[in-house]
Length: 284
Length: 295
Image (tube, rainbow over the protein chains, first blue to last red):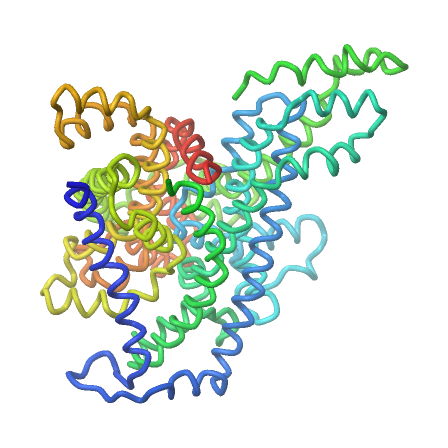
């Protein structure tokens, strides 16, 4: 009987997620172009080609930078906001609402908004720099190699600060005020209280926040695709977008899926402890 | 959430030396800093609204940071027509209606099986389903595209439903099963003794008692569905079938030098979700934190 309830969701999950993922693994061992009726099995050739593809190397580095920056910065900022909002501040619900707002927007619209802010001629960012006398800093943010990736990450940070903030705010409710009271009696300063009460109290939250942020960072696609299309040149390519270009622009479906397999394996391996903890938590 | 009484009482009663009058005004400085930070955070959206409401000539003449000389809604009517928003709105709504209730319902069924029915391989199923949280969409796009092509449903909204359901299931099951698990076994047992079958228990006891979790999951799933981009990008070709994110991308390309029109188009695309968020944020916040911190 239990299977009757489990079957519909499991069927959809297997057909549209598990099977395609495994099927991609198979395509990654072929030279399929994505269009022809036939293809050859080429073993590990696609994987062997990857280190010699400068764009894959660049994409991998970009993914790594992306993972570090768009996890660390939002987590630190989110924690800071949560601690401050948990203290004596007026208008908490309103402030919380504001900081989480970007997270509900479609990523394409976030890309459009920031593309518009970064516009070299009409963008607000350069206009602001010129207005405060920093004309020399005004530049085509998305149009040059040196700043393009950083500019996309700013947009990512903008939309990703809200999530850690919410989780930390919820976790802070679970720390007993008595602990702070006792620490104050003992003469501990605010900073000491933060390190010795708040941070240890947030340990389970740190784990969840960081795990989910890392998982999310490996999925990066929409923002890059809609903001820079991987450019200028290949400066902002990440594995997800480079996979897409290989499949849908260069007719190299076999090679493209191999790129996707590599990044997915990294994501899965990194996330396994989190998935295991979630299962253990709930399994009878 | 707001019942953290002791924070206000704490320093008053404990700190007796010196800073007696401080607590009264404490928080004003922090509040000002936070409000400024919030203003900076929301400024891109504020700027977007101001720009969308002024004529292009006014924008070009005075720059993006100036106050509008005159106001107009022309940008919106123009963007609505050129951006094909009547069509993309309709398409996104159709997908939402077809997908979200169905996805939440089958997820609730699976969650019920995992939480309350003694299902074999329960832990293995959970592990496999939760692993789906970590799978990036792009690993599946080639096979999904091939499947859609052989089923003859490329460039059709129907083709989106399967992949959308599959990628929604892991999070929905995670949240719902942890919620359903908290329903006391005695209630379920009592119903069983009264002769209620598994379906009846599911429909008349489990679902109603899970209402808060169901609402949360419905809302979060609706947001994710409304915003989904990659599957829509690869599966939909013709303008008649595009959803809002894909439509907005095209629009962005056409309007790159018309800042006011672009701003209006972006707003058209995001305003419904902003309004929904403002009214439903309690559920969104509660759901995110429940889903993530239960584990």
